[in-house]
Image (cartoon, rainbow, N blue to C red; front, side, top):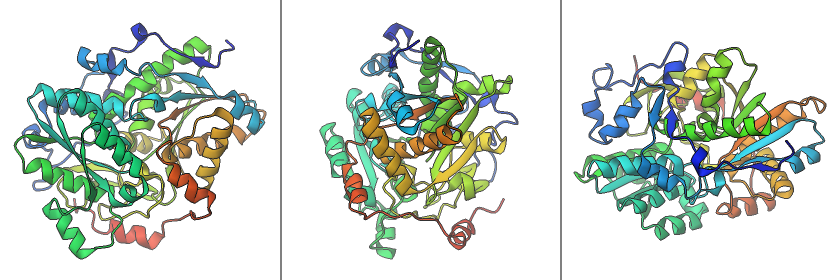
Length: 448
């Protein structure tokens, strides 16, 4: 089928999310209560999450119905296109077929909106009036700002300081949707004030911003917390990407040999690859490649261990690949990938050798993003550039290999142009995180 893009009808959009947990060989380790080191109770988590999401977090069901109210908002941009990147193929001189799932068409410009709408819905359903959250690059904050406005909720966003300074138009987008944004660490929380006193010039981190958002939710009766990646229910919501892609690849008469995504907390990569996992487990020859930054090498150099998801140690203990909750990453421009931990689901799949993690450098990612923009016409977000770099590597290993590659174009970079300006001006550089720094960051992992 010689077709540039494949678009499903709204009637063909999945009406259920796929829960990969029952299909993970050897399963997941449960989140633990930091005080008792025993599996944490839903009642304790209910202080910051609505029960509807906690039920999904722990569900044993392979498929979970998508509420009609969520589907109605999804239809603003879903189903998203599957596009054949023929111009990129020609530029690379490869016989590989490259397809990308364009999640950049959502209102906030990224895949994050898939979970934001669902989370806002379940909070609204339980009478919550306000959500607090963190954001790295600003994509999650933008998505939740959009979603909370749709359901009439207030939204407070703690944005990592380095991205707050680098990406002013992300703040403009969040303000347009009615959210309140502050740079993290902020003077608005006790933990933020503590960090500012100790490290007044800090660039911040997602771990710090998560601590602030959790404190915000825990100290107000009208507020719950929303997380944009890592947790099981977020991976569940993102599965709609891969479910649609499977239908579209079938229409194209193709099946992927390789599925690629960038990895920060794990949501967009898991979203596209998990619906293909059962095929692999049944013997299908398919590879899953997760691409992370060399400056934040969680999967490739981190430890698989129980750790906190934030710096203030307010989260449950999660069994995941981690660089340590004390890890403060360098200020690379892929802000959405600057996180010390990885989704327990993605971590378990790496543990089972079902995912191939690779790390790449910042400059080669921006080069890949520029090539993609020049060939396919869409400027990718710095995070998405990592996936494109991985795709180029796969497609050029053997230029005569007619393999089929599918990747998640997780977001556009139209609000990240200052990052491209710095790249073109030669202000960006590669950064290998030193082994001694990783050892220092992981020395305080909880003793189990």
